[in-house]
Image (cartoon, rainbow, N blue to C red):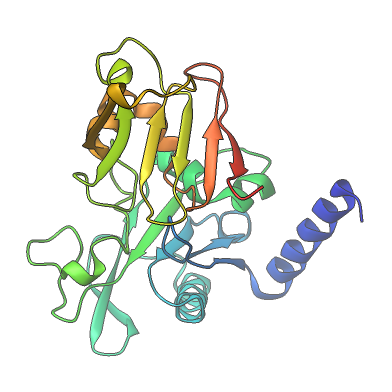
Length: 248
């Protein structure tokens, strides 16, 4: 099957689900860079209601939650935002918030493709910890710290890791003398390397926080979802990153 035939078949499968149920749910398993997440496709086209995205639970649970939300839209016409909603999880509320437009492209690739890359709204379904505390509230469980990105706000740091996690780089990058053109996410220990692409001298090596790297060059945020065992290269800042497996 050619690439064009595969795309046509995929779009037909999505459309058939939308015609039958009103929406399609895309399910993406967790990897070494991002938690599992799921989102709807078709609510905007069918009901003129925002698509919905959810993170950090099993794909089966998120599938059920998004289907329940779709049914609520079908019956009620819309979902109320920014309030506790007790209609989804046993004994726990959930809350829906509007996703910042610039965050949509990071996660809803199939939906953007389905809508021919035209704008559409999205809301995020948030679930609380066992104390009914949401991730933006004080006291939220550390166990779920990187389970749900706060897509209702603009993000200057997109990685699912602590801001102060150590990364390896060179002084020429830290001093602003050279750009980051080569990035490695190590398969063995999960560490990040942000390099110039030139031959590396150990005398030039530096260890800095990951947040310092994103401050020096915000465009490296584009690699937040690059799993371990991959590298990325580009020719200049603003160029498209080319990802490859480090095992090849």
